Image (cartoon, rainbow, N blue to C red):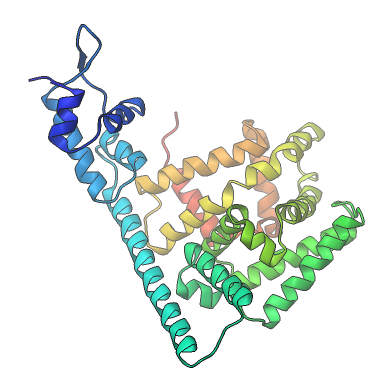
Length: 342
């Protein structure tokens, strides 16, 4: 039995455009075509479409569905965990929205007129934080408070100092800039409790939300300046171990390479906290990604990579500000040791 695309769409309650899209992204390609070029779907194609629809109703993205169908050994448990966390987040957001509406309703019923601009700004920030952080995380992270507190004030003063340094053209390599960058990283680790999951979410929020940049004053330009200055503290150590040519490559690629780390570190940390074994296939994949990131700023020369490890062994301060501690690093190295050589 062969069905044309229109017939299949009608029977499955989909649109022809949807089936064309599935074909375009390689999710469901027809097994045959008619002499006039029409897509023709056989029994196996229809069975695959049923699987796609089932997984779609389950809440998976098309990318995840493609991974599941392409790799029968894919760990569905991790995908289910992701969906559960997403639903938990949606439930929490709905609950929070209801609480805020009740609060507003109470104010209005008491005849109170909240100052609209300030109230909307606070509400915008609270909603934005909810997109990235759970309620528990917001309680642990004082920087996310919408109310004035000593942490928020301290950060505002530091942001202003960095802004002034940039406006007066203080070079990122200067002692003043290095001191500001170290202070920035120290406060960041203090307020996040060194939790790489919080660091990754904060990083994502500031890069994706102009409102967060406007409210906190932490613009992308300020972040880049601090990153460059903090990188200089690392270069000063690495140059003791690397050749001039290796240092040129490192300086050229270090910031862009290490910018890929926060989300990866957070994912590794979550696996470690969940008790996932280093020899689990999920950790093997993360270990491979970790190695790719390192190679992106160190290069493919094994000799250079050995020098990097020597530097890190002798100077634990190279890990400061990254969310990586010795326990997490050991966990990653155990996973790497399980990888089969190519």
